[in-house]
Image 1: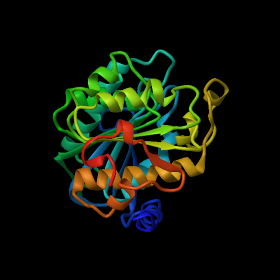
Image 2: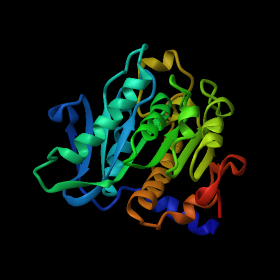
Image 3: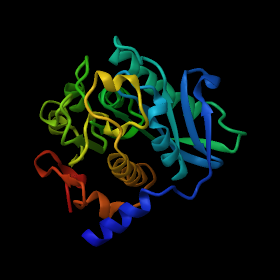
Image 4: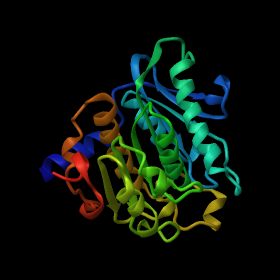
Length: 272
C-alpha cells in the first residue's frame, strides 16, 4: 500500500491531462481568478478561499493544477485586507459557486454540474470554506490547509457539515497551530474527515512566491508543502466530487512528509 501511495503521489502531483484556461472572475461579476479545463460538460467546481492578507495569485499553481485534472476552480479576490469579514468572505465563496454553475465560462464549451461542488481554502480561507459548507447544501466536499478559526466559529460550523472533509495541518505552524485550529475543526466535523500533518510545513508554506505579508506572518513559500497539498487535494476532490478512486491509496496511507492523524480522523477517510 505504501508503494502504491508513493506512486499515486507522484502521479497526482503532476499536471493532469487537461489543457487549462486562466481568466478573470471579475468578468462574470466577482473579483478574482478562475481556472478551467479548455472544455468539458458536467464538470465539478471548487471555490477556493485565500489566506489572511494573501492575494489569490499566491495559489495560482494550485488552481491551475486542479483545473488540469478537470475541475473548474474559482478564487475570489475579496477581503484581502487586515479587517476581512469571515462571514462575508464565506458568502463570496458561495457566490463563486453560483457563478460556476450559472454563468457561461470560456467559449461555451464548459458546464458545471451543481451536484459536484466543493470548497477549499488556506488559513482564513480554510475556515471560511467550513462556514460556506455549513450554509450551502450544494457543497459535497471541503478541504482546508492550515485552517484557522474564524468569527463566526468554523469549529462550531463544522458540526453542521456532514460531507467529507480533508484538513492539512502544518507541523511547523506557529501562527495557527493545529491544536487550536485544525484539530478542533476535525473533532467537531459532522461527517467523515481526515486530518493530516505535513511535517515540514509552516503557515505560509502553502503559498507561492514572495509577498510583503511574510514580514508579519510565520513561514514562507515551500515547494515540498505545495507538492503534497496539490496531490492530496487532487486525490480528495477526484474521489468525493467525481467518484474517481485513483487517489485512494494516497488518501488511506502515510507518505513521506505527511501522516494521518488517527485521533482526529473519522469515517471512511480516517485511514486504511
